[in-house]
Amino acid sequence: MSDERPPNEKSTHFWKTVRRVIGEFGAHRGQMVITVITLFIGTVLTIAAPYVFGLATDAVFAGYLSSKTSPGQSTAEAAAELQAGGQSDLAAVLDTMDVVPGAGMDFGLIGRLVMLGVAVYALSSLFTYIGGRVSIGVVNTVMSGMRTRVEAKLHRVPLSYSDRQRRGDVLSRLNNDLDNLTQVANENLQQIITSVITFVGVLA
Image (cartoon, rainbow, N blue to C red; front, side, top):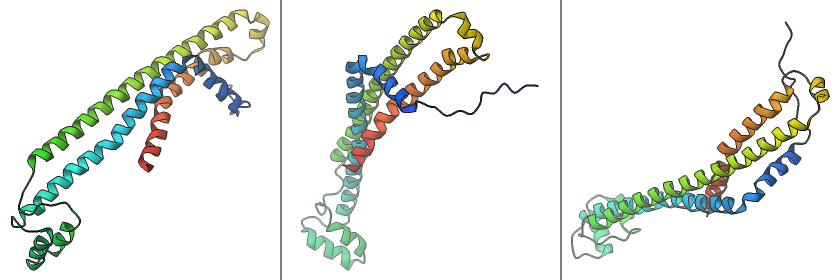
């Protein structure tokens, strides 16, 4: 029984092929710009949302600290009161936070911050969805054009060429390679853009 598996070959023109594939997207610069902008906004909002919820957490903790102190005190007096009550950890934290002694929980502020965080996440999802839809549309358009040109090229190839090829080679290049390229582009184009933006945004 003969082994029909293809040999394990390395690409001989990898970077040339990469540049050529990238060049295929050149005719869709406008859509690619929209993709980058929307994914940029979505990613920035994704990074910002935890910061907003962190502010809400700070507001909750500040309210908790405030409820442990007496109204009308200064921050130093409130810290001294906590220290005298054996709550030195809370006293140390009180000095680092903007707390109004005795004011208690500011539920209005906490509610606004939570709603803001939810809105930021919703907008992030919306912009990411738009960017993903546009990028998928561009990829499908580019791949459809490539399939059309490959099919036209195949019709121009003489029968003698097909006779010289191993069984399945032409079919592989016509279908499998383009299918793999389409899958990789659809799965990774958006991810690459988002990952780069996320990396820069988190560092910032």
